[in-house]
Image (tube, rainbow, N blue to C red; front, side, top):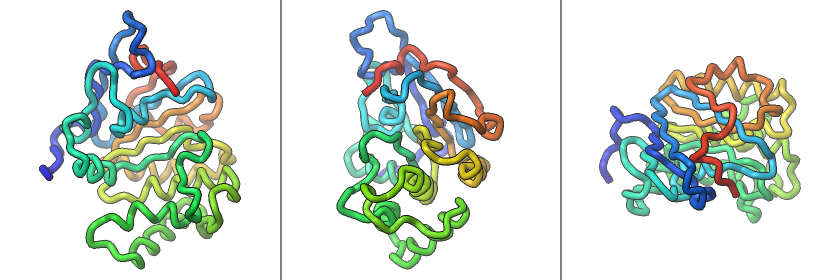
Length: 236
């Protein structure tokens, strides 16, 4: 597999239109360059309609127009092995949507560690140690060890933080409502870790509801979108 282009923006949207608004012939496309260390903050209007931007950014959804590049190469131009390898360099917190973030036949701690077991040259003990160290940095004494269906929503959100911050290298963080159900004071360690990763070159997409974000001044976004741009207004 070809090496990523570290001179290119981490993430590029080029005249992109979400598949959810493909019938809106007058809708414009959306363009954005997200460079290492940048944070783009997007707000959307309804908790019942999750925008497609996170799936577009990670190559899970194909745009109806335009293209998305990650580390200098289009998602649509990658073979399946390249897609999987690239996604190992992306951390994501999924919006709450019926348990889609979890494999229900595994415990939460097993879910969190599972992606790291596919990293070449890393032992199970190393993954366990790295995971517990990250949990401690995020203010957690331990990870939940029960099934997702029996774990509180707040604990599931915080477990997602741990999973999202584990990849190395971590080139991109995609965060959908990352403070969902978590008391505001408990999100402070997560913001600290996000800012630390930005200092190391991680780019960040932060997608949230306006009334759920109580820590805006700490994020220091590179760019903000008070409403979703026209090209991204499709949702699922």
